Image (cartoon, rainbow, N blue to C red; front, side, top):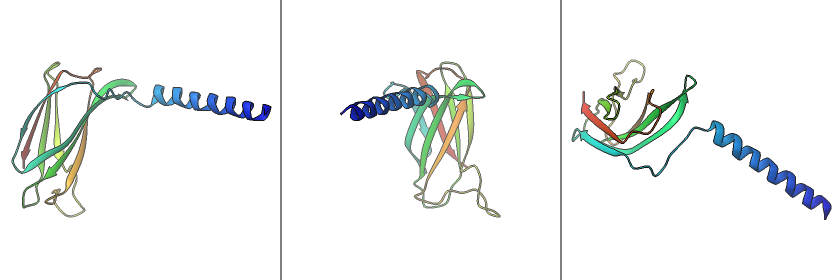
Length: 136
């Protein structure tokens, strides 16, 4: 009986320690926080997922915005993605897909979903984001 109690005590302490370490170093995801998002998306694309979270970048907390975009056109496309934080006036952008296969242009095939993550030195979740996606 004493061995069972000792085992349970060690087990619970280990689980608690892992939870503390994971929470401290796992990045902060404030799920459920309402953010106003303004979309300006080409008819050739469909945004399937948007997530915002705070995570360390170069030892500083920074905002990360993850987008999943689906190519709904009948031809292969490359999309230009631009984000604007209305709170701070910061802008960031890039292409989706970023790179192509060796020797081929970077294009997303019809029906495929591409993911891209943008990081910005902004220490809190914004109240409002503007997302603009155009086809190249």
